[in-house]
Image 1 (cartoon, rainbow, N blue to C red):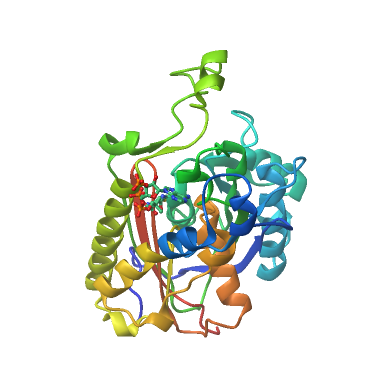
Image 2 (image 1 turned 120 degrees about the horizontal axis):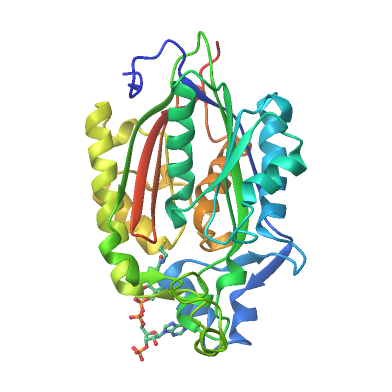
Length: 340
Ligand code: COA
């Protein structure tokens, strides 16, 4: 059964091109053993992560975003000047303002586009796709660039072994467009949030609640704080529930899915969701071993790798799934672009 768009569309919203970028520097578990009291065996068995990429000192989030954006725009066949909307999902922006998206807009030469950042932590890429899709569906805009980009290494306490082993830097992007005479495209989406649990995964200092001060620096509250086990439980519950609801809405069976691309946080979380939803092992895209948790960038990077590895054929049914700080979560079904 073809994917059911959320609205009755003559022109479905399609992904025209994807792109990604990960920095050159590789930080392995063995490297981390020299920095904090940890070991490769602990990290691998608890998380599935073997290495992650770390941006150079002079690379900001917008630099990573720009490289992914260029790749996505090239792949889309459009020119940057044809973009109407640029959204950057990030929780590690270059600065409070201007937005990282406006920096990318300038560097990319997307003169016509309006640009803004979107903050939904690790769920940011799906939040971005859904916001951009609705802008395009309004009929006022034709083409949007959605980017998830993070320099998580800049918001990590490198002396905290419970968090520093988990995260990495990178960016993923997709160009989406209203397309005439095509089938498939972006289908049902579910987004959710529960702000009551925000304290379980946060950067409490350095913002307006607790501006940067000597105290903030001393207590390192400008870096990530996380209640790992709580986050783990909620991530599994939320993503499983979202996946099941979306499958029901689209009237798809788990075995109809050619690929599930979940947020890459932890191999054990991926496995727990996979078995609860009832998807075969080879249908779940995994690259957390190479990049760790790149937050808002992870789904964009994974989607681009799947595309470039030839992992998606026209008509393939795909599910994106995410969970992150807030808490926020989201899922999106899509049917890979069919030839027109
Ligand atoms: N190396 C070695 N030991 C470590 C360690 C590390 N890097 N980090 C923690 N430990 C220790 C703990 O101190 C604890 O020791 P203790 O038993 O002596 O007190 C022990 O390992 C177990 O810690 P615990 O926190 O119970 O481990 P866990 O099985 O819950 O795994 C996480 C920790 C962080 C890997 C896991 O909770 C997790 O992945 N949570 C979700 C995180 C996430 O995905 N966040 C982003 C969501 S978008």
